Length: 381
Ligand code: ATP
Ligand code: MG
Image (cartoon, rainbow, N blue to C red; front, side, top):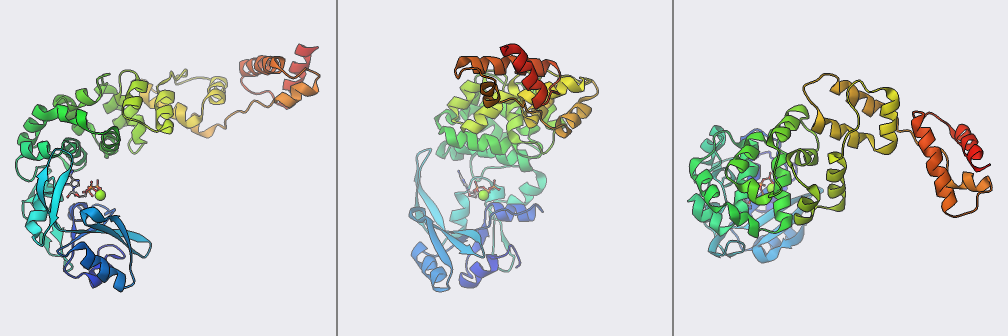
């Protein structure tokens, strides 16, 4: 079975291993397969030793949980021993290694994620995942309620996969999520933010986010409130744009509180705040206004803002075209130019620069170094 470059080399050493989880799902769905994960009905020391003996580099990524990463041709393949759950407490599972494929599949979250495929391409589907994938149903393996209580992250994982593969919401899953929604409040900020980003990054996450709102999950995660209409508008307008812009569209209230609570990176936080600031331009704006805006704010931030404020009117694409095409004006005068005019080092330099910049902006950011110097000289003389 040709799968991804490198997979065959893992299989050559571990012929009894199977590809599991997302790779099987995406392969059957005809989607690009990102990571290929293997499971093996062997003890971790046994398959690690076999891989190493074949000259494959083995990184002990999560050896306590039975996972190593095999490096083949610049790619990493996770290989994990089959496991069965012994106990779970809503966050951590106690597992034991097994050679029972069905037991390993039973601890996976959704039927579409619980399939495995062997070296000959045979699919092992213990819980009807293939039919669910075709029907667009994200169904828990076992009882939704029980599986959520074992691990509340599964509420968000449900929406991640529903956003990507879902058509019809699975009623028992939705009912259990509605009942247990506050379980997401106990999850770490990193995990919540990681899942939220993946949810909104789906090609069309609108139905999933609507369902998150309907079940109350979104309200638990974002008590500041959301603007579903703006979110849906931005998804429709800007397919394939940065997921962070979609988040900016979704958040109705204070983005800083949200960013702090979910521990966004500084870069993410700054982007959210920047795109939520007023655009200050409208379709039909003159080039002078566009240049002024570009002098103050990077073009990509301005473009992102247009999506948030775009209304039914015409001309938005034209405005975005100009924002992308026009080069960003750079104020040419520098502190040393002002010092050369005899201004003493200190606050006066900044004052001259600010005043000349204001004049330069008022003129549509067209002045070059010489005209800015001339203006500065007039001011200091
Ligand atoms: P993606 O393409 O988004 O990475 P994936 O299926 O690979 O999708 P991962 O989060 O990488 O998703 O997890 C890999 C597999 O591990 C899943 O397909 C699922 O079988 C299992 N799994 C991961 N997290 C959980 C969980 N919290 N509960 C149960 N099973 C899980
Ligand atoms: Mg994965």
